[in-house]
Image (tube, rainbow over all chains, first blue to last red; front, side, top):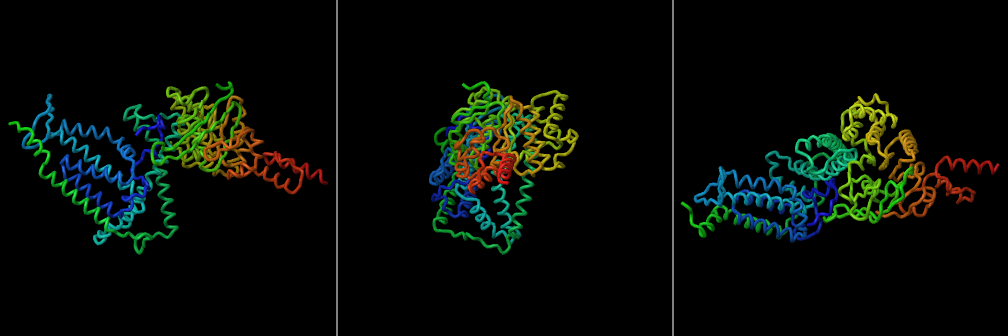
Length: 298
Length: 289
């Protein structure tokens, strides 16, 4: 997607895409929030448990399909990934160059001094990058298609069984809710402070100075930001108590979550795909494919 | 391009927030505005009309997406201009600037700008002293913690922080909002004396019509990102139809004169301040007796 020419170096609010809700009212939006949370949990299991490139590609395809059917512009989603890209590339590069790959048969692709790049390490690098992308897109999908209220109710419901072990489900969900709610507020406050300081001669241009100077220039930003958040938290407590908030006990919900057949179906389909992906990882499908094309060097 | 005494010239400026995302919000839709030396320009408009967005274009915090902004001869569309120089010459005071103080000590906060300019210690100290005294704060307060100052003092301190840059143009967003009557009065007095230098100019955005009536030479009415009315303060502030339609109010003096006229009393509606209105009424009373 084309960025407008020099929008403003200060547009922070627009850059925080995670935690945003895009009300396009699609099929995905109408799914039960609990189903979506379970699906993203399953996705996480698949992403962590499987180190198969093919498997991860299947997951990526699945998430992309959901994004399209949720009518969320792909470019907008990918924009949110952009800031993480340099770190991701660096990590993948480290994985490829530094971490020695293990396996029954390694084919060396490139060798120089201490570094030796094998087919396995290339695979591992790609898997690492793909893992991150799949997970980030999956989480974005849930946040784009689920309102904060739905999300909070979903979390509360899913945590309810844990109450027998003493976990305060309602309070935990509330913490998540407030955290997400405060993200854009803090971004807006930070933007205001940045602008005020830039107006007084501070230089915040992106990437114009080293890490240390950058950190030093951020300090005058963090101090008032902390003060503002503390003050906001204080006001929030007062506002909640003024409306007789007493915590989770005995609270009823206006919106009762009801799972439909399609929610069960969606979770079931996801678990099957994830099971397949984990299976692909366990049989080392890439190793099999490679061995069938290239002979093992001895 | 413009007359020599034109400090700021905005032509057909348009701005859309979050452009290129599903959250696009059009804010300005073709605004033109001129600030001449020696003038105080009032910008009135209801909340959300784009006042703050327009102000942020005046010192280059935002660059024009469409249209042009010329500030002191430089075009903000040109990426190679010295933007810090412009921000120094156009001092922007945000809404509730007292929330943006970040140094623990009052003096350090005022010194932030001059230090960023790279001035010598003595010069910084002198600038801080001058700026603090200009806004009516004793220089001794510099060693006080900002948290110990009253809200009015903190707002004046924030203003001093901008004045310490020695700007030629002062741009203020709702400067009197939330001040007590005395604080408001002294701030307005300061602004009108600051503006008396013919080289300087003030741009003032507010929905407080009294402030506008007291200070402005020219007034622009901004509604939903468009200028719906502009001209000399005396003409604009009497245009009750447009102002009331724009969810704005009339200055009390204009409203008073209107009510008197409606009751058939021969007063003119062009009194902008309470002093002028009082004089008219005095004349009226004397004529009656």
